[in-house]
Image (cartoon, rainbow, N blue to C red; front, top):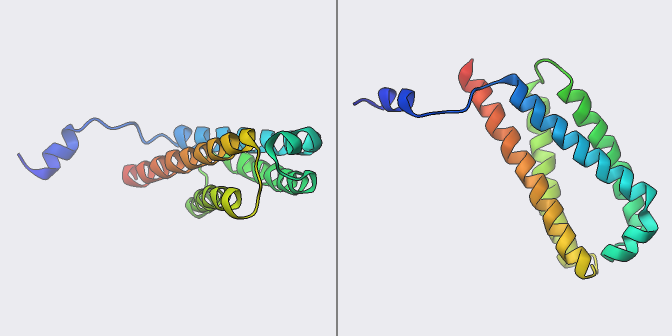
Length: 141
């Protein structure tokens, strides 16, 4: 059996543009939602997580803008590859910086020590799903 036969026989998920757009849309909703929550509840969330109020406001503004941008990208019938790659890279950078910030710059509470890695893992999952869908879209062409 040739490698091509094996590759053809291996079950794969469909290379649907809907999958990529869906992952981008979910990323936009979660990112934008977190941003809005950080803006609206910066005081109580800052106390709960051990992150300063002003830091959460700055992060909230950033996440709200990024969520809006990713949402606009998700709304396009065929999101441009370079734009999707930029989202993936931003998500990877956010994941690394979240863990570094927790260890080097922030003094998180117990809740913060739980929340920061959970949100970093969620963002990493978005990056993996987006990368996989983008790669499948490229292979299908």
